[in-house]
Amino acid sequence: MTSEEKKAYLLLKSVIFHYHGLDDDERENLNTTAEELDGHDELEWANEFIAMDYFNSFERAREYLNDVVGDYPKEKRVMYIDMVWQANNLKGYVTELEATAMLKLAKDWNVEADLIELIKKLSQG
Image (cartoon, rainbow, N blue to C red; front, side, top):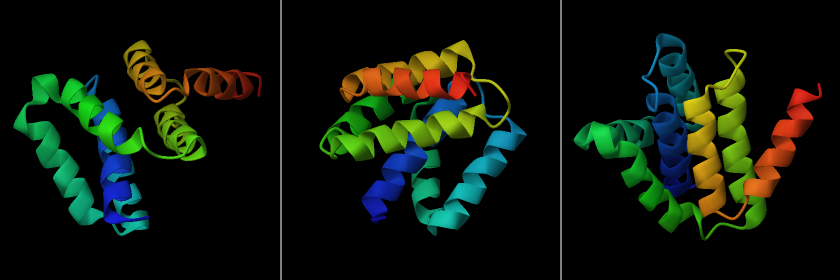
């Protein structure tokens, strides 16, 4: 993964986690992901991005991600949104706020139907 890809993935994951308030498990998940990706600088960047204007961070991230991720091949866009869905689902559920945020991004990236199919497959076992 390039530094730009790490930034996009960690910002995506972080902004979804922050959407309802970051908890300790989610913070640990972000740190683990940064470790796995060798992306500590990129996570720090994502945290600073969110902290700059916490209240509007989702919309700002959405704009940034649309510019970056929107140009990725469809498979990669689906992979990003799926990885974040899976990470959110580690706690056993995805909140309505998180699901709505991910659906908005999936719609922006023209992969909404793909996300819905992934969710259906996951819910069937």
